[in-house]
Image (tube, rainbow, N blue to C red):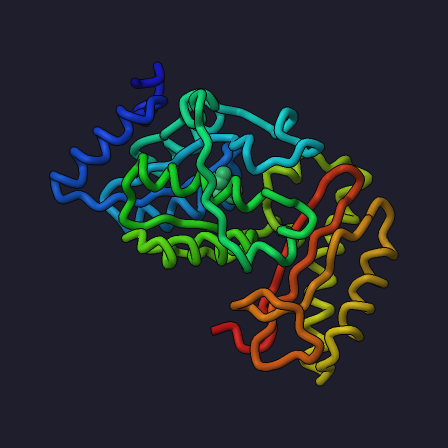
Length: 290
Ligand code: PAF
């Protein structure tokens, strides 16, 4: 299916996408996939540019996946802009947009879940039960539907990237996963579709996430190794901003995501903070970033 006025090929049916991917593979073309929930912004476009450099054909998916939202979360009001998305996709050279309906992805009788056991028991997994099961299940489906050789994800969702990499390893999926550094607004705010929810009054408080990560890094550079002391300072800093409500501030092992008491060579500092009604996340690896 082609959308009038756009050269980008849009496919909304699972079997058509699978056939198209098979034809490409048979012709010897490599496929890169960038899975998205749409409402595309510069950070998505950066993932797409990376995908473009790594494969012959760039496929993106646009699908607001209901199974990764909790009952009181923002599935219904999640921002959507399909026309704008197609324009942006075209501007970075996307070849195919896979844009299915919920019924197409989860037909009646659907009952399978892909679940990564331990990595999901930390950070966002604690406050969003079932979230990563929804993510893994839809990403596994998207892999089976678009048949990519590589798939690209943002490091802003550090835990998501870790969980998906684990799933790919554990299930022997023959797909290379690439993580792309977080893209930020000029003032440092990590780009996110949910930034659109922030009011003008709340926007300055949203900067406290990135600034608290910088603060943690600075304390580490000054020799502080106590996770408790660094977290207390981060909490104090964030809470000095109006509209903020901390979900978690964690300092953990960058591989297992388990909390640590004493910082070592390489440490993940990750946090989730509600600013007004908007839940924002950010993270930084401090120390050795290799
Ligand atoms: O990061 C996202 O936008 C989503 O979690 C993803 C990977 C597209 C799965 O729905």
